Image (cartoon, rainbow, N blue to C red; front, side, top):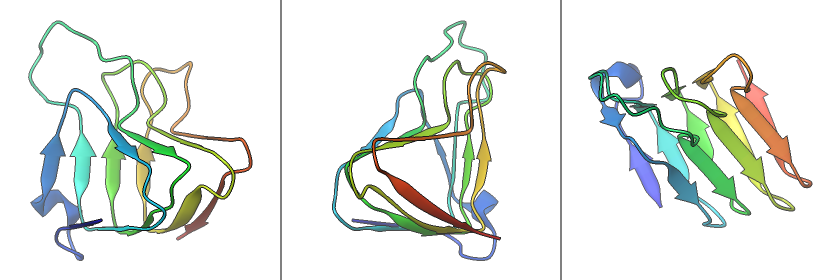
Length: 113
């Protein structure tokens, strides 16, 4: 699976969503996209992350994940050998009690720049 946007400016390609992306693929690529919560006040506070990597791997370059306005982690990675190599990834968490990136169960994420 590939999700490709503008490699130089991720704000040119924006995905606004109230749910979450669940990534189970053993390989994939994301480049130059912004994934965020809708800017419209809906009265409903989502309680899930934007990206949940469940045993899969995804490499990414120059992506923004913005879970502000939500309760929960922005990205969670779980499962043996799950994760990926992420370069120039910006991760903004939800509530102050949660994290931007939550890694568990033998998962590994390499963060570059």
